[in-house]
Image (cartoon, rainbow, N blue to C red; front, side, top):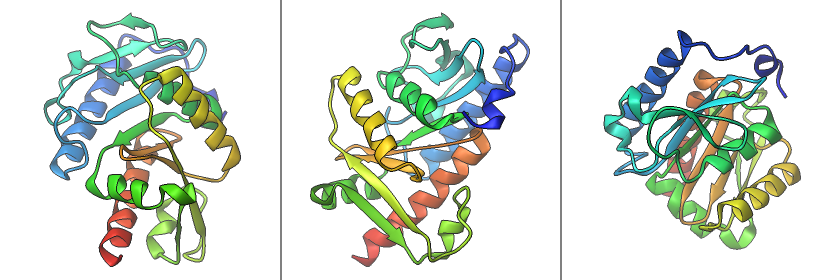
Length: 214
């Protein structure tokens, strides 16, 4: 896991409301940009590592009108430990990313461009993004000459199976900053919510540029 995640302490009653508000703000921002229309998308942020406590959006929530009571706290198995309602159906995918990448936050969008490109490049099994200055907004990328390889995996309603496929993709592409689900959308992450949000902005920009160019 990353150093930032390792240093997190047990989530307190005082800082969970702040984390919930931050996730709500992300939802409003992404909705305005057209990345999470309807009830699409889901967001999470790690509150503590030992034991793992994950703040995550509840299932079926309108991300453009998220309220703190729609943010739940779950454990390492996805079981609710605080809050009412049902966590996102894709909680197991968030947990898979956290395990494989040591992420402090995971964000999932359903933009037009991520959906279109995930289908257009599905046969290749990945989308290659290279030569763009905006790539330098991704953690650890120092030059526009970087080749960002974004794996594309098939969507499924079997979340256990899909989490396994996602874990395999993350291991096969250890340097990737995101994964596309075919005809579904984008998953990306970061050391914390700020970095994950930046990654969404960078990647959604690049996906739109590629889509409009082609």
